[in-house]
Image (cartoon, rainbow, N blue to C red):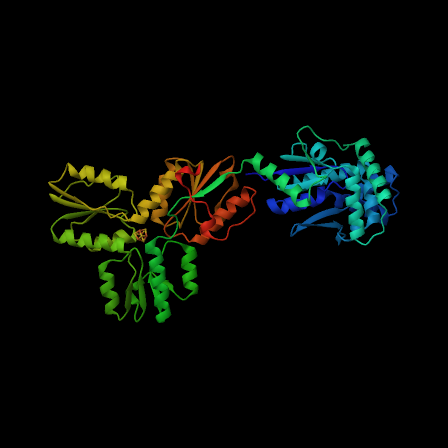
Length: 519
Ligand code: SF4
């Protein structure tokens, strides 16, 4: 989503620059202080003793001037060559000179060229006299701030006094009136309210109220997208339990490792490694370690080998996976041919299969065996598969065997997450599924969402491309069982930032959950 250009025009002392600066901070945009650029021109003219009414000399000055703006913490730093003149240009004297020099066409043309160069990519708020009419006539939002000359004069007078400067109200009022006349009568790009600009009378508004008025208009017109998180997203019970068991084991002893990555999420794996809980992929040479069996479980021969080498096994196999393993073992012992619906090489399935016997088969969802060997068949399922795939496979076997036992071993957390994600995807314009690249349950969510809308799978917020969100009204988020809350939060905040809403949330409870009535 392209960031907007916001033009705020109006006469002197109408509150443009303060409003622009505060609004930019609120919207996460950059404020370009165009007035400071004219001040820098005035300073340079004074340094080189160029008379402000000498058109030729001013033109030559503009050909030579090396003016640069840098942005730092919401502030503009103005450079002439390599010199930072941000402070020097703030004097009242330079302010008067800036007003005079800005009336010169060559100065305006030069500054407009520079302003367009800086801000044309979007994401800027500019204030001035001709931003919406001349500098950026196609600005996304145009505001025209007005207030009675007396009110503006009073503001200016108060400001000068607050800076300890000598001021006379009548003189200030006359100066304001003179500036208004100059601004309106200028040959090039005079001060005018464009038909598509929204006029805001700031006469009776505090600065906060001014900012609120503009902010509300922008939010209303942009119709900012709603962002929802599918319920049951993120860490499931089994993953939380495994992490807790690993941390507790580390607290009780040295040499703690997990057999394979504890969960399919590089962020969490790195965090655990920082606590001394490392990953071991090859258990054959492990001795005297505390070895955590992850929530996926492990083949039964691994348990025996680890214990034979003097290791302590902490079994964090998820109870849902454990139940599936036990069913494979029990039903095999009862002479059923066990069919495991799942991904053959997924560690959970490799582990489950080891509890069966020579006739145990693994079938991917949607596939069928070349021949059925047994008349008694039992189907169990990788815990993260889809119920409809299990139903389809069961239907196929029901016509092929004499006796069929079906165990829905899809875990409750997975079923709830898939249902909530599908509900949201049916109403969203785009879904972003967050999870590790190797995470099977994240991949399931991704495929599920693809049925209903555009969908992208990411590991972190850095992968989000703003164009994915362009023109989208409802953005859905879903996260796999191994995705930490912190990652979900970062993704949510990044999307808000792209949408021009800089307020960040800091807890997962602040991310709106999708309920049927949400849309
Ligand atoms: S997804 Fe389900 S089976 Fe897998 S660890 Fe989580 S709760 Fe257990």
